[in-house]
Amino acid sequence: MSKPLAPQPGSTDPSVIRNFCIIAHIDHGKSTLADRMLQLTEVVDERSARAQYLDRMDIERERGITIKSQAVRMPWTARSGDEAGRTYVLNMIDTPGHVDFTYEVSRSLEACEAAVLLVDAAQGIEAQTLANLYLALGADLHIIPVLNKIDLPGAEPEKYAAELAGIIGCDPEDVLRVSAKTGEGVVELLDEIVRQTPPPVGVADAPPRALIFDSVYDTYRGVVTYVRVVDGKLTHRDRIKMMSTGAVHEMLEVGVISPEPIKSQEIGVGEVGYLITGVKEVRQSRVGDTVTSQTHGATEPLGGYKHPNPMVFAGLYPIDGDDYPTLREALDKLQLNDAALTYEPETSGALGFGFRCGFLGLLHMEIVRERLEREFNLDLISTTPNAVYEVTLDDGTHLTVTNPSEFPSGKIAEVREPVVRATILSPSDYIGTIMELCQAKRGQLQGMDYLSEDRVEMRYVLPLAEIVFDFFDNLKSRTKGYASLDYEPTGDQAADLVKVDVLLHGDTVDAFSAIVHKDAAYNYGVALVSKLKELIPRQQFEVPIQAAIGSRVIARETIRAIRKDVLAKCYGGDISRKRKLLEKQKEGKKRMKMVGRVEVPQEAFIAALSTGESGGKDKK
Image 1 (tube, rainbow, N blue to C red):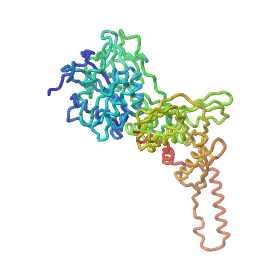
Image 2 (tube, rainbow, N blue to C red):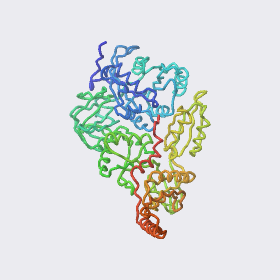
Image 3 (cartoon, rainbow, N blue to C red):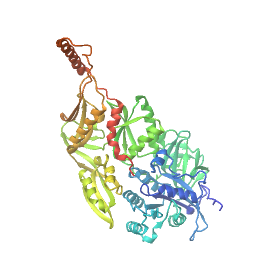
Image 4 (tube, helix red, strand yellow):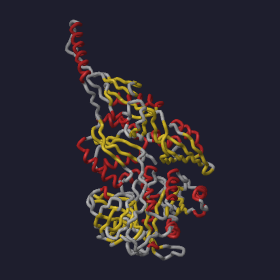
């Protein structure tokens, strides 16, 4: 069969363009379905095809999760219905499924008219799919429900089609059934996408307006900006203006991604493509900005995105202090690629210069750190993650605390902590164990609904600080991996919180400070000092390790001194001679203890601070 000739970029009639994205939970087969579509539309030849073709990063391929949304243009000649024989242009965006990357999804939705809602026919709809579905409905997209993995022995398409139909408000027969792995039903799905997706609407002869929905940094070419054209057209060598910053650039290259970049003369209404201006300054291409032309440009920008608020804060410090400028540059470039990341410089007495970074969640934090280490060849220490607290002192002063070292020591009238509204979907057998876990984490049950006779949706309000550690791991282990979690911020509440400091030899080590609930402070202090006792090497003098709340010590361990055997040379003889040598040693130890400083090796910091990182592991 000869390969269909797709309409060329720029000359494409908007009526044949179909912009859609795929939304789903992790591991429900988004990237595999994208592979099948690339194969059927023949934009990737058999030689260069590989599994999860659109997952470009090593981390994505290793973990089997999508982190960055990817846009790709595909020609498709419809095979059935009134559209049969006509060639269409499909712009597909493969989005991440994890709650920590919701911002990537929300930006992708703005560039589309429809969303393929993909659900595993063996597992049913999950909490994060539900969250992304509400995002798509909020963006006024047409929803195409699809059940994937119908080839699995454990698949129950009838049951889950009814569940999906109940949530979306369609008939179970309208839910498409496909197997991305075998390719069954994918041709019919592509035809349905052509039939159901509304074509883009825009004014072709109006001043150009394009929305930036993503940007990446290329070492050789500078900033590559991905846009969705709404009105007019963007032409090669045109001078363009960024409406929020007012910056003007010349377009050195314009084109589409299919799935490798293809240069063109222009891109018009409804098309998704890329621009290269040769700009190396990463802040000049802000995601959510509107691009127009310098002369006869638009005056009204397009609606951008609500910028995400960081949920979790942690310090990132280079192990080698000389790497600080490299880390700053790396964060600059990474922020362009990941607009949800925020950072500002900070200093720690124990760790030196570093940055206080804001993340959307624990997996986000782990991925950012791993990308910095791999892509920029850095060795980093991250401090224990924590939330943002609002503290009111007795004199009425308000403080915002993002770092435990900022927590005031004066008289505190009230501490408010952020809370999240969590949605947990699980088989009904695990209701008891989930309730027990949520109550232990100071959660309040808001409501519970049965989606079907054996699947339940539970809604809880939980303090953010309680779920950034190991809540997800505990939830998965208690429900044998069946429960799924989604959460969104929902304000704050007053709480009885205290700062636990760790003192080494009487000196506070700021890197180990943490803000915890009063009831959990004792257990936290005991666990940390016993861990540090194992990690810090013995000194020439005795070192007390204490956990304290203010001036009150709540836990203590002692690292015993290394003692040199000063009696080795005494064979027999008078006891007074031995005693004299021991007294002399004792005096020396006393002097050393007064002037001695405890050297904490970097390994001890890394090992002690890694306690809080388990929450993001294998967050599937």
